[in-house]
Length: 280
Image (cartoon, rainbow, N blue to C red; front, side):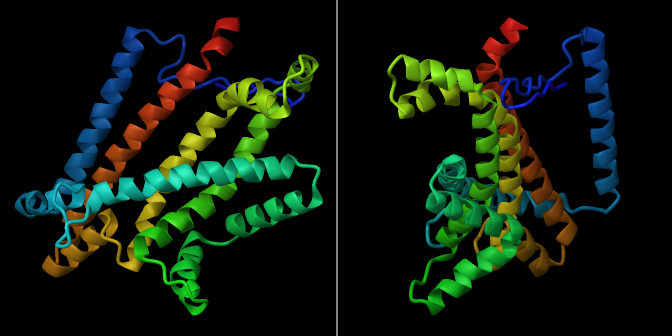
């Protein structure tokens, strides 16, 4: 499905499509039949636990975020998306700046970037959450739980995006930069108008996977008492001794949100990979 080569050649990953290029209507119908069968088995499996659907219906507005907290703030899936939205923006900025640092000829910039990526890729996210939420107060600042979760997710995933962005930038042929420089373009203009549009085709698939992982890893901020999906599922399940109902509901919500992220990723892949497919 992918065609990779060395960074010097500029070839990258062919954007993945929903179905193989040779898929016909019968193939797609069989795929949908397999999905329907597996989903039916999934449903029958959880029905064997004698779930109380009335309890699920009662708590569903809280888990989805349709009901606000007592303080009038968002909760559940709405809060999860809120945290992920700002963490995605911050991690993209951190990842891009760090990638430039890893490509820099400055020893200071390169050293800072490599130290940052090494630490945040080499330590567990849960430990980083505790360091920010419980460690910073010992130094003076006392961050709230939600900002702490956003900071931790941003720093962690920014380190992973750094390597992805670096690989994407290096996948663009060196001749492209030289051509832009020969036209008298500023290096930043070359990067913004020539390099990045071509690098996006390589960057988007792994970046989309990272954001889906972030969506699921956001459940770790429940340890700080943030009223996101997992925290509410555990709280309601513990209070009524109906853990399976709440955990299954939380799993389904995460799954639906992940599918939405996958659809956005597929649209972006199709957009930035359009020119590449036309040449092939």
